[in-house]
Image (cartoon, rainbow, N blue to C red):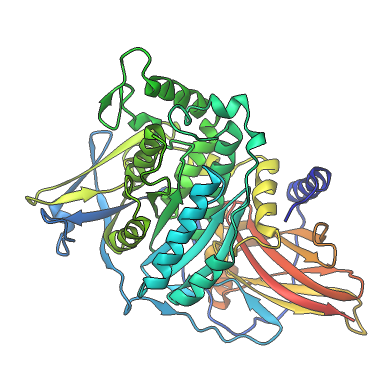
Length: 541
């Protein structure tokens, strides 16, 4: 959806104002029937570091019998106590569709597919060359048409905003049909600027990445992480891209080499690349840290597949950022091959067998600095692959973003063609106008186990959230909006009762002209900034 700059500014102002003013609200609506999310209640004042391990033997085969006692975890060289350890293997038997029975007027954003390993193919139409994107799309279709999928796959496209082409499915024909309908937006070569030519990521090869592309890519990664965080288990993001415009962890870079080549000699293109990577990181340091933390929290490992393949251009700098992205998140990069199908297949296979370990850091000083993680095995001939570290951002400060930033993220997920977000799970009942009430009424029933309650000194459990509905009619660029804030101050007994009932009520009303409307409904947890969204239809007579 393409909104005018003026209307988007008005929308963001509306959301920011609604977020800044709070009022208490209660509703006596009954709980609809259905299965809700089963995650435990979140707490805002805890920080658990989660590390996925891919363990292989000397032949590259998965090692299925490791124990926690076989491993040592270090953070910045200091041993950490492992608090949790599990072996996960995903196949056809472990993936299942969640059956939720709902009345006709009720919708839910509860995840429909459950598996301990989900796969996302991210088709990058925002970075790189249009001709290579067309080639990558053809290779993706070849992969889907020849695949017998036994693990859930979803397909997203990255443009100026994230687009869901197909939700999680093992139906390769349906997935292929969605890709066949998709056309990457053509790029105007006249838009190339001095800035793009001087980019750190176009020092070799014909690439057109500007600082605006870096910011856009970071924002879309952040949105994707928020969406995937609502699903349990590991998420393998197979990023089909020709050009990577960013490095998430510059602390892991060797400042004098790229891909094993010495760059210290004068005139070597990579030298400028490292200098400008540092400059770009300083510009977007806060956003990069936030995105890195979001990917870690969502259990995302990135598997870049080089869509540039063995082309006419030498893009060593871009490939280096692919390697860094994979290594820093515990994934694996696939490059220097025209067979992109092999990279897609291996990326899905690699992330299906893994271990998950967790620990609470001994260092409680949340100073925002990068902390390096090391995991060592006492077993011989075992190779471990895992994320290289994380930024020690204060878990409370991380969620205290300014209202403009929160409004921007929320508004993107409320747009008509945005994917469903499942971090905050809810059911929503939509009632059209009646003789008693001339307005459309949307009643939310929010699963409190997906909210971040804060326990006050007096024992009261506190939560604050925003409920919003956007109604899209004939003018798809100007939705009618209704937004409000709900607060919960619950005693211990009230809190336990709510957890047993498994819903927190909230309702919104909209006065709409006669017509057919698509409703985008969203809930934002103000303590954690986690989001849930869903879509419904309503006819106003």
